Image 1 (tube, helix red, strand yellow):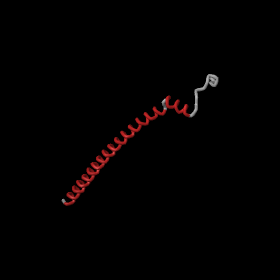
Image 2 (cartoon, rainbow, N blue to C red):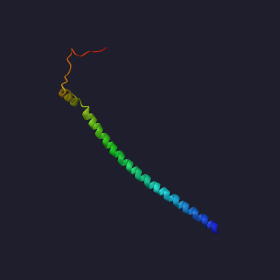
Image 3 (spheres, rainbow, N blue to C red):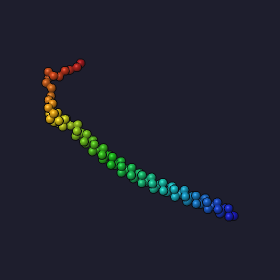
Image 4 (cartoon, rainbow, N blue to C red):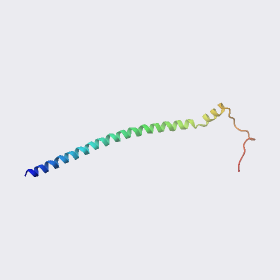
Length: 84
């Protein structure tokens, strides 16, 4: 009879340990998901800002202004060569 009680107690304790491990993993995964969501939002905001900056840097007005500051001018029609 004592052996049956020992086996039942071992099974019960093992079940409690497995349940506790599952709960800890559940909570840890929840924290990881929350951190990943925050990181994703931060990266999406950074991506949006970089797209705006990219559009600003590629603007034709900005490029023309920099070219004029460096002394570049539009070529004359005599300087343009059309390659067939």
